[in-house]
Length: 371
Image: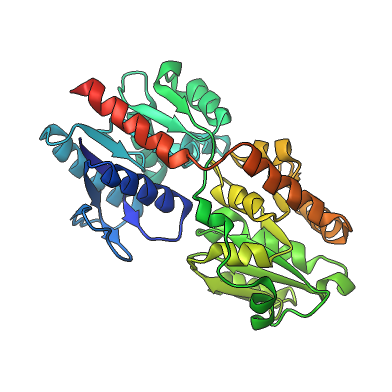
């Protein structure tokens, strides 16, 4: 099988990027020829993976994405591949792995203003290329909720969707560093709590919300609480916010880290007050590590947390005061660890380890059907 994977940018620190690479590795292991079309790549390129770099000259991010889509169309028309699989919303895909939320839902904001914004018009047009009734693209979704949204907005035919259960690599359950050693290395004393955030794109993940919630804790709890933030993003605004709120010494930006499991096992709570989140693989990873969770109800995997009883969900519409109260209540919960145990039990019981294999199976079946 000759398959073309399309990913605008690769770096090893995002959930989408990890999924992409895991699926590509499985396809390679099964003996298929895998080519990747991208604009940039951080880190090592796996042996056997052919990477084609696209040079794009454009000033804005949305115009760069449009140019990337046009370049993909050139590759698609050449008919060199049995299947074209995309991890971004671009034209010319046979299969789209939808790890991002529906863009058009932002129309809840002032519609006349949106219609004249070039960024909005471009990204919505690209989304329509994937989901319109005229398109032939099949779509892999990570939650049933998003299927209903796309069908309602674009009229996408239901048969084009495949909703698959969440899944993580088994090694995400295993820490490399002992909990006590890691906590001690970062200055955490006995009796103190570590609240962990994981995710690149600090605004989307709600880092500002987390800082405000920690700052609003009662003084005695705040003095015993650390906020660790793992991920790739611009830190200056958030460091300034933490300083203004008087908790600059309690907030630590750790940058992008490969060994997330060790930090999950070292945390007392995973906080994920995201503004948008199609899935939220870190939520499943936290459950696998036995960490209690406080996350936005809008996350695609929120239902997994609810089903497992692994934590609490921040209701929609979002309220900062509600988050502040919920964080305080969870940190005061004497039985907090029981939520983590429920999450770990749920992951093992439901065998949430085969997402990437399931996607590779779909790719193989589609490629065989199109031959």
